[in-house]
Length: 235
Ligand SMILES: O=P(O)(O)O[C@H]1O[C@H](CO)[C@@H](O)[C@H]1O
Ligand SMILES: O=c1cc[nH]c(=O)[nH]1
Image 1 (cartoon, rainbow, N blue to C red):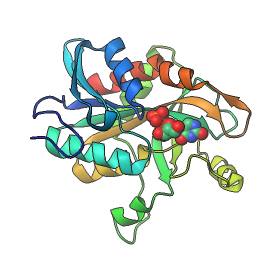
Image 2: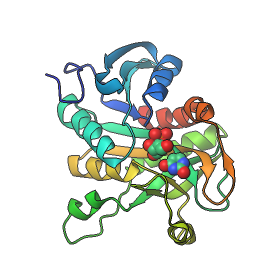
Image 3: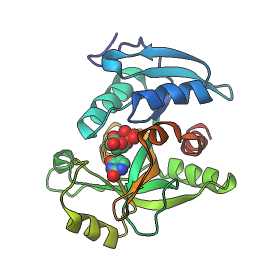
Image 4: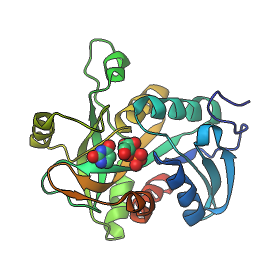
C-alpha cells in the first residue's frame, strides 16, 4: 500500500516521526542522528528515512512548506503508516523583541490565519495546542542540555512575504514569539486523529530587525533543535 504522496510500504515508518519542512534537512537529520538510516520514500523529492536512535525506531519525513503540504503528509503518516507522535523541527522568524537568532521556540500554542482552522470545528475559533507530554519533555531536555529556548505561542502563517507589519506588531503585543508556516495544521490534525504533536523551531531571522541566517545555516544548524525533539519523542 502506498499513498498518492508517499511510496513507503506499511511498517516502513516508525510511530515516532520528526518533520522538518525541508527535504534536505530531513536527509541531514537521518544521516546525523539515525543508526542505519534507510530511505523509505522520495515521491516529489519529499524524502523520508527510518533508522534507530538509542535502539528505538524513529522516522523523519519532510512536510514541505505551508499548511496544505503539512496536512497531506501528517494525515497520510497517521492514517496509513501508524504515526503516533510527530514533532515538527522547523525554522521560524522571531516576532517578540526578546527572541534571539539561534534560540529554540517550543510552541505551546499556534495561532493561524489558515482557512483550515475555520473548518476544524465549525462555529469555533479552535485552539491549536501541542500534546502536553511532548511539550514537557522537550522543555526538560532543553533545560538539562543547556539549550537556549523559549516556550510560548507562535503564529502559523499562510504568507511568508507578509505586507502587514501591524499584524506582526499586534501578535507580538499578544505574546507571540515567532512565525512559521505549519505548526497549527499539525496540531489540528493531531487533535482530530488522536495522536501527539509538537513543534520545535530554530529562530533563523527576526521580523523586527535586520538579522537573518544564510540559507545554508537555515539548512544545517539544526542539531540542538533535533536533540530537543528527540528528547520529547523518545522519553
Ligand atoms: O524550515 P521549515 O521547516 O520549512 O519552516 C519554515 O521555513 C519555510 C519558509 O522559509 C516554511 O516552511 C516555514 O515554516
Ligand atoms: O515562516 C518563516 C520561517 C522563518 N522565518 C520567517 O520569517 N518565516
